[in-house]
Figure 1: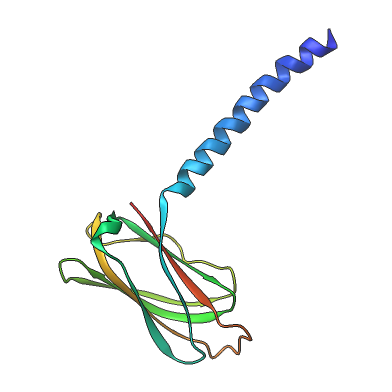
Figure 2: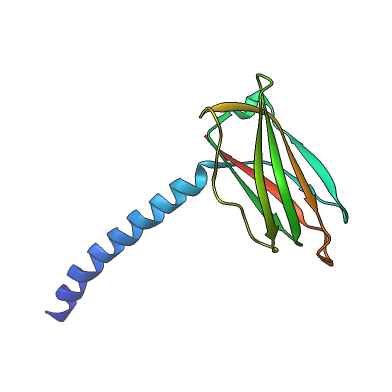
Length: 135
């Protein structure tokens, strides 16, 4: 009797866990890695080229690994020549990320992404900036 009651409780629990896990995996899969750059120890800018074959994007997210840096702004150059300047002004600790950034005009082809930063925070390791796009 106790075994049947346990089975009745376990099956719905497993179904809920499966549904939560599959929705989480589906959400992560929508983010595409567009490129990465290891930054220098100074005030600088770096460019990540994105091609039309990568598709069109609605959102961006930036993540910093390995070290820390001070991000000032991001400039997104679209396929039609338009630019969008995104003021970030954030001190990134290793492993931190931006909020989700909505792109102007919804689904856009991105030509390149330029980010302006400095590393005056005396980080021992050079930070690596990763850019992700969401369709």
